[in-house]
Amino acid sequence: MRDIAPIIAIVSVLGIGASTLGALVGGSWSDRLGRRRPFILGAALLFAGGAALMAFAEAFPVLLCGAALSSLGVAMFLAVNQAMVLDVLPHRETQYGRFMAITASSQKIPSAIAPMLAPLILAIGSASATNYTALYLITGSLVVVGGAIIVTKVHSVR
Image (cartoon, rainbow, N blue to C red; front, top):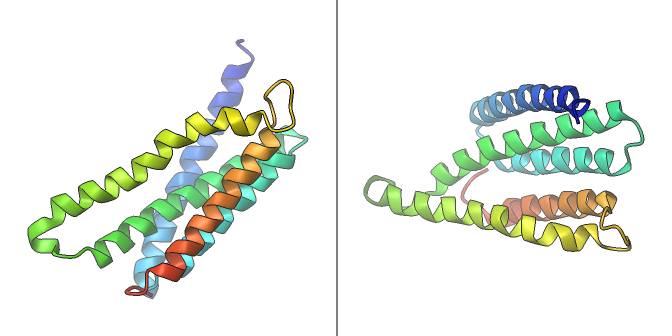
């Protein structure tokens, strides 16, 4: 069990670094260019690429690269998505709290449902419920679909 501690530390440090970079770069470039949608789609594709790398990783360094790419994509998505929410928020001056509560709820629902669905996905074609390849590929695909929906349905921002 003690052998896992250095692995967790490495993954955590890479995740923190990638998340910081993704949030800072995604948020600031999105502001500088005045565009949100390309960053949303790019972040979703980064996450999906990282998930695909993790799905097929046969070596620890490849798994680390996949985890770092996924963290980079998630952080970029969250930063730019928050900016997009603020851009399209109706009645900003009088009902900010209400709309931010709705936004927070919409972000928490998938986080609550995903752990309940994960065992079902892990069991796909596997007697031991360890089909992480399916889990990573399905997760990456859902993120790309979500990013595409945002990009195609939110027209009031660029």
